[in-house]
Image (cartoon, rainbow, N blue to C red; front, side):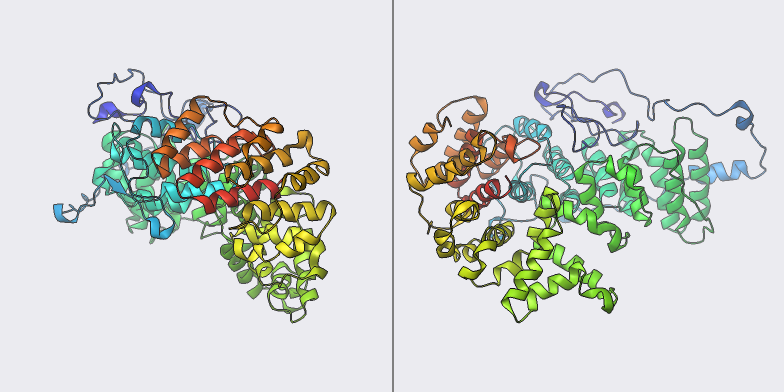
Length: 602
């Protein structure tokens, strides 16, 4: 098994799996790593029938990019107990419990939801080649600009689906979990990893399992991996994890010895060892107080995030600013961090689709429980309570407006506030005297998928004029289960005349979405320069998957066609293809929500 270490040839000659977890600002196809050298990104093990050559070069774990210790600091001090401590550290942990054959879980069908829970069909990938699907997942540059596309992608990835041909089934699960991590979906990734027995892990799955443990701030999840993980790689994560697990098991002596060995090992960053020592110090019988200093740390990686968060340490703001949006989503659900430290990250998590409306409301409700009564009225929790429970409709509307205005000109925060208020907005009756707030009310409801509640505002929207009327009308034109507003060519022309977006992108996305939902004829799109017939490799693959009813493949390809920093960068022709394909494979509801999001967020 040792020849599987570190770097392997990818399936089907695909490009190498990107090292580490990408930052949000990445523009290159191969993202920068959040990991230090040695905590490598997983490589792909060839399927059994593939005779791939194994590279001869093995990268040195923790490349020597830090200066060596000064000679005077390398003096060895004799210790009468050194040999005993070395022997103690060398003791192998107890062998894992053998899993009887009847208790083993299958690896050819792995997932946690089915069609009844909004997942895709078991045959969602049909006869698609596993090498193609793996490469496709690897190349999706998450997070995506669309909250609803991310929600749909998460559901597809955690569905109970058959493993496709030409890929190791466990590697296929690992690829799904790896994409979920890059999307910020740490909990979803953990569900997939834990659905596979450790004795079935491949080298790639070991690497993904380590990443998942760190993303979920759960160092204890590393413990079952240490013994078998050392059989497939000699990465320096294992000695550090071994030390932490020994402490968590109450073996303080062995834990201390392993930490001291790691500290003497060349190439290891002091902060990474210190963080592991912090976990060791939290174990039983250690009596080890550890102070963590971030002064000389200039970058955040998965190890530093996961181990620091697991001990409740606050990561410096400048380090979090340099991390990708997905890392903020991990932070939002880190259980050891106080709510006050997580609330800002929760805004990002909500906008990405990781946090639901209910999750965001629950977080602010918990914070409100600890808020001084004298400060409650002006707090987010206090205003949210007023938006839900005030007896006066205008008072409820005022509270909603105040919450939205808190977002200012920050698109992400404003979007998060719309998500936060979705249920409260859905409780307001459609009234003409609330027409000026109708666009935000409708947009807020649609962030949580309340399409029927939003459709009740169709009469109000039809009676409105100006920019607000256009926005409310456009949202309902694409989001309602059945259109209750005028979607004639004349109404679309009026919308276009009032559109002040660059290159009429708002109108063009609206028309593309309406055409994809089959609510207008394609001629209207062609008249606006949106080609519905142009073909390329992506459109042909998407068309073929839709024709064959492969929900999972369609979702992956749809996500691949939406890789840009914001909605303004999504080509209208791509949106047409995505919406049309989703509708054809039975995902019209999600297609409508994606279309509405395009209108609301531009």
